[in-house]
Amino acid sequence: MDNEALKQVFQKLHPKIIKNVNPDSVINELLAKDIISDGDFCDLSSISDPKSRCRKLFSLLYRSTHPHTFVHFREALLDESPDIVGEIDEQRSSLTTRQLQQPVMSQTTEGKIPRVHWTMHTSMPVFSLKRKPV
Image 1: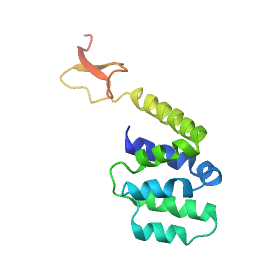
Image 2 (image 1 turned 135 degrees about the vertical axis):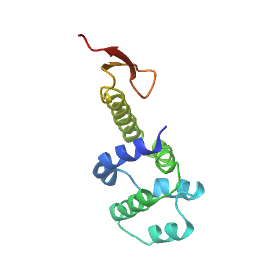
Image 3 (image 1 turned 90 degrees about the vertical axis):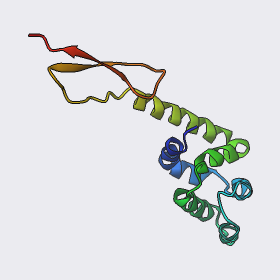
């Protein structure tokens, strides 16, 4: 799973997650995977309001340099919030499909016009060159 695509989905679903997820259900797992530090854990534990704690957790996750932050966050949500994980997966799938369907056009060179061939097996469209009609 692509961490950056998941990050975009989490940003889109941020308000819903804040409203519906108890951050205590994921904090221990994120600490165990080194996504958050001991200091972050203590800071989060000192916040009494669950929604404020969840906002702070998101703030830490968005700034994280761990290459799999949102992959691990999604995994941590599986037991507590399977409905939200289903929505995350649906959004991610939709995002990936839209990215695959966007053509990338290059400039015409030497009298040739690029022709786009769509493929769902790669992350990029396949191009062939066709001569301009005279």
